[in-house]
Image (cartoon, rainbow, N blue to C red):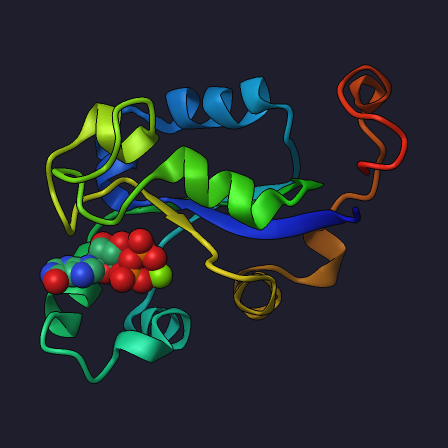
Length: 155
Ligand code: IDP
Ligand code: MG
């Protein structure tokens, strides 16, 4: 099982609600690691790139207004099956349906203002990481706790 990378955003509502630390804590407590992190303003152009699959949908103008309205915190999260593990931690899109114990299930009740973005596949992760980060911004290191968090064939 190979270690994976996934693109995570704390969205503008998560930043305004001071949930950045809470969200990072959940990621770290789960045993995943950060490989990169920065705060930035998403421009309309960046939004269209990121959400290319949604640009033609009726809700897209509303989504663009939301994601560009305040800064986001972008992160690359790394670990075994990081894409799926993060989607499970984040929970279903609509906070009203997201399971308790997930971030969206515990902290919100909105379909749009759902605090976190997580890539939905390895292919999406590679595409999104490329959109948000330069190669020089990604840190290569092996977290020392990996030895006490995973069997050798899991990372
Ligand atoms: P995901 O974030 O769980 O992968 P997607 O369906 O990819 O969900 O939608 C991307 C984002 O667009 C959602 O996280 C949410 O913020 C917003 N969104 C999705 N569906 C709707 C909708 O029907 N109305 C308004 N915003 C939506
Ligand atoms: Mg999605």
